Image 1 (cartoon, rainbow, N blue to C red):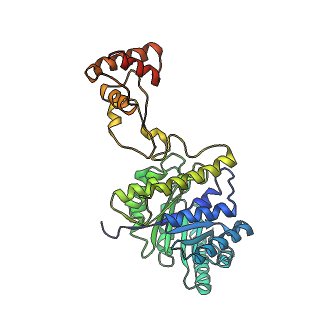
Image 2 (cartoon, helix red, strand yellow):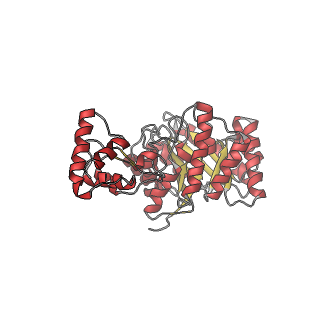
Image 3 (cartoon, rainbow, N blue to C red):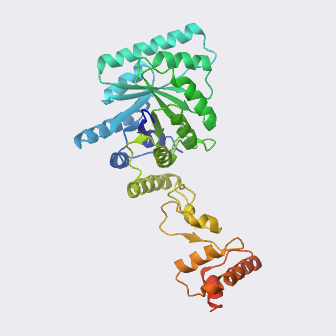
Length: 370
């Protein structure tokens, strides 16, 4: 795979502040940054300074903390693609300036030309005041934008910025649509790297992000537990792990599962404290307990997730291999020669009771055949 290096932008802080009214304290922001540094995240999108002075202060605080401790992670801030917001981001001291731009489909060519000229003025303004600035502009959004307008903007911006973000902001696209759209635009981006940012309204964010990278994306935008606006964005761990397993070169250390688990539990604790709901549930991929629960024997053969203990629910669907695995795990005494009869009795009793059997019921059946 040629040129397969992927940059990771962790947007837990900015997108997280858009999740159901969530607010991160300064201490929580620092802890989140520390998790990101320990996991080798490339860029922390730390906040949205144009929204309020407190966001400026938060970004400055994180930037100061990172520099004081010689962190490798880069601190970025986001705003609208105009000189007013550019001044605020420059004032926050970041070198990584991320912007978003929305152009309506009914725009005239003259108006579009004016918008692009204004953008160029903003870019020149930033470069004048910070020659080291790395610029990203997100075109909102690729699922709804007119193809002709989008192509003009991509061709124009790719010569002047570092990262061109192509977000499925509405979260309504399918994986094949993401692939086709980004693949068709990748030849027009020049030196700019395409960034993939997918929302999860249809539950496709992580899958869409994988397809966006396969289509030519070089930057992935994701968050812990997929936290973000509405139904969130791509999940950091599962998306990156999927890409790494397919050969992409990514700094994020998905092998440090203990730190990842602590990171996810920390985010979940903040969410629960403020919303009384959990993001980390039994059904959370990899980190939830459901990935190590078994009913049918076929599925019990695999090794999934990081749950500390496998859980078995024995009913009419169980087979003798699953029953044996359960009996061995619980260290029950049983006659292995009678395993077929034990299994049959478990099935029959489950049907009679209309539920899965309890630990004591299964042990009683096993011991009855000794």
